[in-house]
Length: 501
Length: 124
Image (cartoon, rainbow over all chains, first blue to last red; front, side):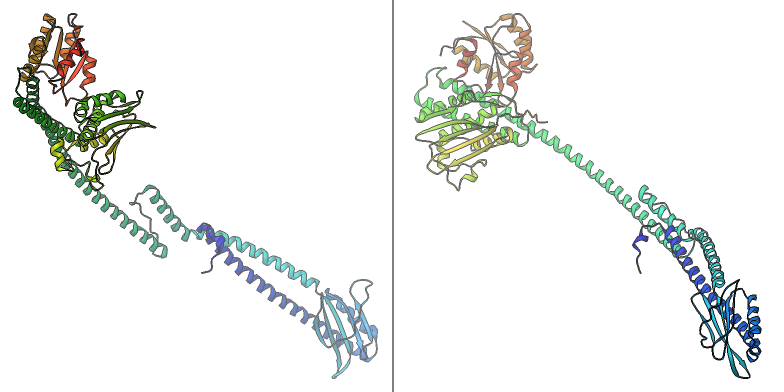
C-alpha cells in the first residue's frame, strides 16, 4: 500500500476527515468541470445554430436585392440583425466578392468586411464568424457574412462557473459536516480501544475491558483485545498462585533452615563449651605437673641425684610439650570457629621483639648461635600484642630448632602502611618441593629432625592462621635447601578493632 | 619476714605457689574464696597479694575493686594470675587496679623473680 509519511502521525479522526474531504472534493470538482465543459460546448453550438439561422434568413431575403442590384434593400435586410445584440457586424458580397452592403452594431460603427471564406461558421478568438451563400434556384448570387461577439457567451459561462464553484463549496461544507459526524463510526471505537489500552498500561489493571459495539472488523478487534486481556489476567493469576506457593515453600524451608541453624548454633556453642572446658580440664593437671616438677627440678625440695634430675627434666619437657600442643590445638579451633577476639593496642615493636628474643635466649646459648636484632626503637604499630608475640616466638623458635651453625636475625622495616618483620636463619633450609606443604598442619618435613627438634608440628600453621585471620597480614617464606630460610610477616600498621559477635 | 596473701581456689596451685614463696623466704596466708581473700587482705595487711582471677564466689576484678576501695587495701601490691585462654583480661585487670599480671601456667623457674620485680625487691 502506498504510504503518505505526512499522514502517519495524524490522529485517525483527522485522517478519516482528510480522506473523505479529498475524495468528495475530487468528485465534485470533476463533476463541475465535466458539466461546465459540456454546457460551454452546448451553449456555443446553440449560438452557432442561432446565428446560422439568422444568416440564412438574411441570405434568403437578400437574393432579390442582389438580383435587382438594390444595395438599399440589402442594407435594410442587414439592419434587421440589430435584434440580436451579440451581432457586431455583417456584410453582403456580390458574386465577384465585392462588398454589396454592410452593417455595424452601435452608432457610427464601420463594418470591417474580410474576404469571404468558405460557407459555414468558425469560432475566432472572441467572436463567431459565419459565411452563408446567397442562392437562387441553385445558383450562388453572393455571400452573407455575420460576425457575432462571444463576450455575452463568455459572461454567461463565467457566471455559470461561479455558480458551479459556489455549489462545489457548499457541497464541500456539507461533506465536511457529514464526515465530521460520520467518521466517529470508525474512530470512536478505535479511540475507545486506545484509551482502554492506555489505562491498562498505566494502571496495570487487567480486569478492564473494551466495549464491543458491532460485529465489523473493529468489533472483531475489540473481541480479540478482550480475549488477550482475559489471557493476561488468567496468566497473572497463575503467576500469583505460583508465587504464593513458592513463598509458602520458601517460608517452610526458611523455618526448617532456621531450626537447623539454631540447632547448629547450639551445637557450635556446645563445641565451644567443650573446647573451653577441655582447655581448662587438660591444662589444670598439666599446670600442676609442670609446676611441681619444675620446683623439684630446681632443688627447692632437696637435692637430686643426676638420674633423678634427668628423669624429672624429661617429665618436665614432655609436660611442656603436651601443654604447648593443647594450647595450639585450642587456638586453631578457636580461630577456625571465629571465636577469638583481637585486642589491638599501641605496641612498640622493639619491646615485643626484645620479649620474644629473651624467651629463646637460653636455646640460642645452648646451641652457641648468634642473634642479630635490627628493629628501629621508634617503630610503633597498633595490633594485638599477645598474638604478634606468639607469631614471633613461633618463628624464632623454629629458626633456632633448625639451625646448627651461624645465627638468627630478627629484622623489622616500615613499608608505608605496613610493617615487615623478618626472621632469618642460617639453618638447613627448605627444598622447593616442600615449600607448598610448609604451612599445613602436622607437616614436619623431616622425621629425623622431628625427633631431635621437638615442637608440635602446628607452629607454622598456627602462625599463618594468626597472622592472616587475626592480624590481617601475610606470611611469606624464602628458602633454599642448605642455605637457611627467611620467614616474613607483613602486618598492617593499624589493626581495626573488630569484636567477634 | 614479708607476708604474701594467696587467693586461689585450686589446691594444687595453692600448694605450688605457697611452697615456692615459702622456699623463697616469704610467709604465706591462704584464702580459698574471693570473700575470704578480701577479709584477710584488709585485716592481716599482707605485704603483697597473689590473686587468681577465676574464683568460686566472685570474679577477681570484683576482689580487686573491694580491696582497693578500702583505705587499708589501697596500696598493697596485687599480682593477678589468669589463665592463658582469657585473652583481653590484661587491660581489664590493669584498669581494675592490679599492679602486675602473670599468665598461667606459672613458670616455677621464673615466677619468684617476676614477683620480686613487682614488689620492688628485685635483686637480680
